[in-house]
Length: 201
Image 1 (spheres, rainbow, N blue to C red):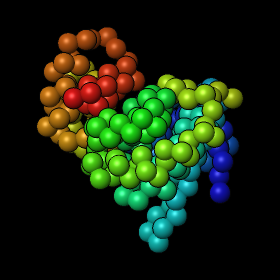
Image 2 (image 1 turned 180 degrees about the vertical axis):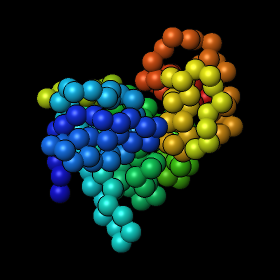
Image 3 (image 1 turned 45 degrees about the vertical axis):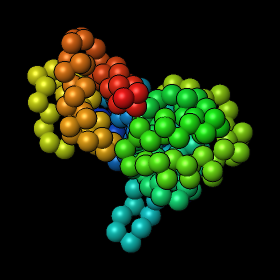
């Protein structure tokens, strides 16, 4: 099993990044691919690997605690990798942990693939199992669908990323107009703002 990959980011797409490690390109699915930038800087990406009869998939995280939270979510009945990534894409791990510890089922149901029953199961399974996570908060990166309609490429990439996370097209379309009123932002900015709008709806 891999613990992390350390290399250069050579591609960033709405649902994944490619990490070049000594000439081998690893496709890594990420909750927020746009926290990474293509370049020659060495980046450490913590990874979780799943193996099935049909595929081997790597999921990537900017910190070890983010990876641990993902793995705890995966252990919950009814939560798959896509739903766990969508929850982590919120970017505020502290808010997710608070919601679980405070039994805030409504907050958890804002994420795609998480209904009331699943949210209650998350709280039941994890409420007393998060103490081993360290300082958690906004995404940090350790250094060592259908085509979007927006003419703003950064916003278009963010919209595609939201769709890849499983948010419904009609919900994403509602917030796209609001996001488009704030030109000049990075893809990561638009994605973070979009997630806040969707989870606070």
